[in-house]
Image (tube, rainbow, N blue to C red; front, side, top):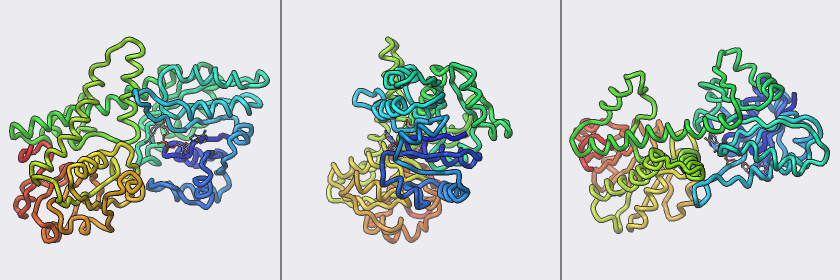
Length: 436
Ligand code: NAD
């Protein structure tokens, strides 16, 4: 069976390469010809551990192809995955213009039975809408089915998440399409991955509900952390004890600067918008977003409280991506915090192992340096914002020697407050006492 994946971003490329790894003939399509050229030389245009090796392997074994000719890829494929971006619009709703472009191309090129699968995160009802767009561009009455197969991978561990997912969700209206999807995912059946087979609408909802729930856990623990700061309790111990309760679970209970990235902020906003459109006041998700915005601002307050007036001061920032192991700076708390520091007159020196080229285009005023130690040189404080592994074991004596004042603001609670105090730092974490 030949398939194509349209959109070779974080999701589309991982999907295409991993299906090739399952032994399927895959064509990855992108309208960005520059990206296709890079891919065609065996390189991945973004940072994702393990992906490039798999790309090269499957390309060499003759199962993986790249093109910017979407029409040809559609004509030659039985299954077409839509994996283009669905960014948020000003009002919070999902912008479906890229999905619409792809649906039109499919309609214009359909030449026999096809299964059209949405991997992009799209609001409930989009499957039906795509059906209408394809039907309106189709010349002959070629048959097709619409399937929703939302993606749950995490940037930074995307390959592992795709090859060994917690579950696969497939929403389809007809058995024929479901059978095609089962065939594609057969290798995951063999390792007993749970499959949830449902309708298109329910599958679309599962994705939004899942992301909104994870975002809720983050905002919840951040509020607990803020209260811990006031009452002198340690949020780490609180979260650990909470997480030992199986009904709660330990994941996503890490306090920090708030959630960011290309998914949680826009997906929670889109869910709110969907609720509003349907006359429902979704108060929890509304609060989750408000708390998140407040948390970003609170982090800047923490820095100001310990450094004082920021005008003319140099701050060393460690971490720019929204989380470790990715170069993605979309909606990164680090970008928000740095912007605020700059607005208040601070100078920022920053280091990130993978995200500096991306950050440069959104934060040109920052001085980018080659390692963590260069970032803190002559700074009034170091602020750790993204918990890359290489920031977990810093040479603290060296850091102290390079700083103007030994101030360590640890927005991911990577270090132990007592140890930092013993090492001679003024240490500020999130929800572990100290500066609020
Ligand atoms: P991305 O922005 O990294 O990639 C989108 C790609 O689509 C780009 O390369 C763009 O050039 C291409 N594209 C746009 N229009 C096209 C067209 N008409 N024809 C061909 N190519 C086109 O996006 P992403 O992060 O991979 O996200 C894609 C979707 O998956 C979104 O809906 C997102 O919400 C969802 N998702 C993302 C993640 C994640 O961690 N990034 C996880 C799960 C789901």
